[in-house]
Image (cartoon, rainbow, N blue to C red; front, top):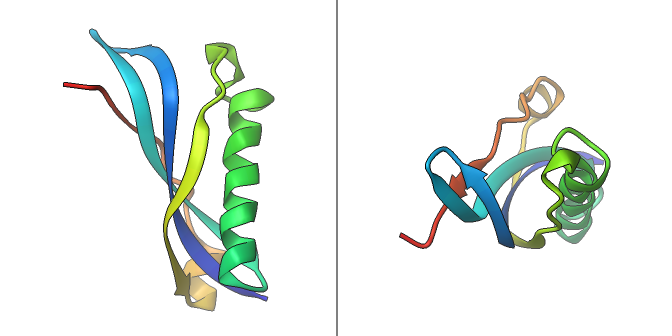
Length: 92
């Protein structure tokens, strides 16, 4: 298994972020998987869990997730990768 960096796009949400309402987001996750397809699926499971039982469950939202980009990363990058936060966006 190797490490992959997966960029996900979330949509179909309506949550307050500052003085606006967010309708979507982008988030990157680094996962260990056997293929690009497996990496995308694993990253979507991780993010879905964050929204249903994890740190974002209090928002009562269930985003629609899609894989925007997947790239293979090296062992050191993968093993020590930080899992960055979400970048929310509005319709504006």
